[in-house]
Image 1 (tube, rainbow, N blue to C red):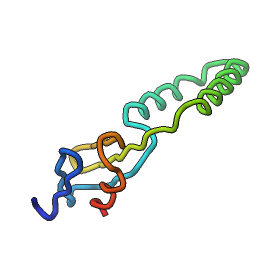
Image 2 (image 1 turned 90 degrees about the horizontal axis):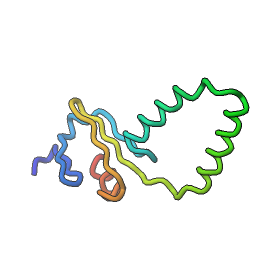
Image 3 (image 1 turned 45 degrees about the horizontal axis):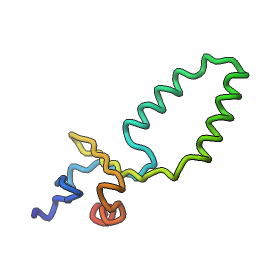
Image 4 (image 1 turned 90 degrees about the vertical axis):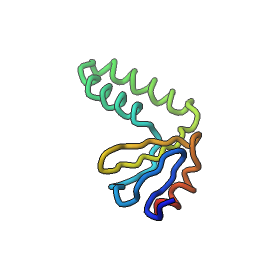
Length: 96
């Protein structure tokens, strides 16, 4: 294996191509959906926004803890790994 290549899961990434990486609580698709819905929710009345806020708060408290996702952005691609796929702490050790 090349010394400059980092192997995460079944993917080999050249360490010189990595621009940034971070751990987040949502996947890329969840983030896109959240941002899209936030942009389109400002048209409701004050009462409907209050009710939606109360329901959202209730569901967040009821929801199980979110998975962690490791995001890696390279010059040409973006990768997203969940904690079900890889050991995130071990992968962060490889990246540092």
